[in-house]
Length: 190
Image (cartoon, rainbow, N blue to C red; front, top):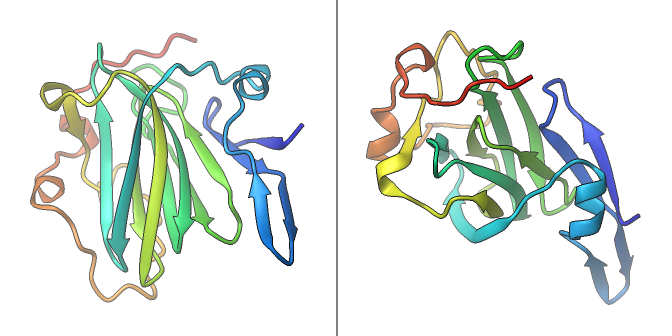
């Protein structure tokens, strides 16, 4: 199998290590294979691909889309390095409000699967970073776009800020609410 699927501290959020075939010419790797992902419990019907470029210190998130346009995301960093985070926002979940975070980079080629019912965000750690992610569920819907603030004290994400001079946020992300005040319509289903 060209992938290693690694369980995280939050069930259903999966760190994915692809098999990389490299030589003096460069490398080759599969970034998605439906049959392997389904065997690992990731049954995603991808509807959109997104690509962003950010400078050091840019923090994007924490974003999600409400039902019926909820999204799962398969995230990878193709240039530079980011700290990628998923926060469980499913009401009634035993891990509600908990987070996991991983360094994704062009060097380690790790990917993170973030299913529906989670807020997602990332911090750019390198001078530049390019992030690509596949989206399942609903296409982007501005009316269903939502989020929680990156530094919510109740969530307590331990962002790696040692080398970051300033956290750079969009105007939209500066105004996001805390989790306790967020508009969430996800309920944990067991």
